[in-house]
Image (cartoon, rainbow, N blue to C red; front, side):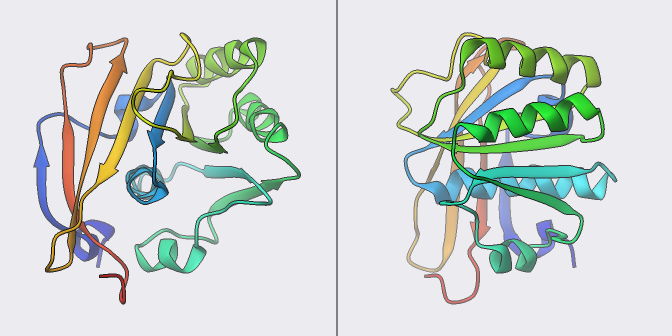
Length: 197
């Protein structure tokens, strides 16, 4: 059974949230609570894995997604390169090395509330364009907070609401899109892992 069959109840899409949409771009997905941003990030990880693209997830030792939940939702953890950097400063530097290799279709940087220095952001943006990779920066902030920088090509803010019967409607608020303008939206309804209500 696929991720979509297991996790999604209803899908409402007015525009795509797909790997092809973010390839070659520096993308920031923010959320004040991690659940919705992680959920939308996992949809892209799964899509990349289904397309045979190598995926890497870089985070600090202090923070990581819960692997059993990811595996339950269809993520192949054996195929996912997970790097635990000693601190948040090293997370984007590790991402640069991965992108420079040209070997990854998707690199996720789990930044929390950390920033990336502008010179490093410029190098990251150039590398994703050069290798037509996707770089997804997962940040913890409110939608009114500024993005990482003007180099971010797509900035979305994820949020989730809970219904009484179990499904979780999640939506992406498009705050900035240099390709199409912030004119599209994306929403999906997910079911959480067993025991989450």
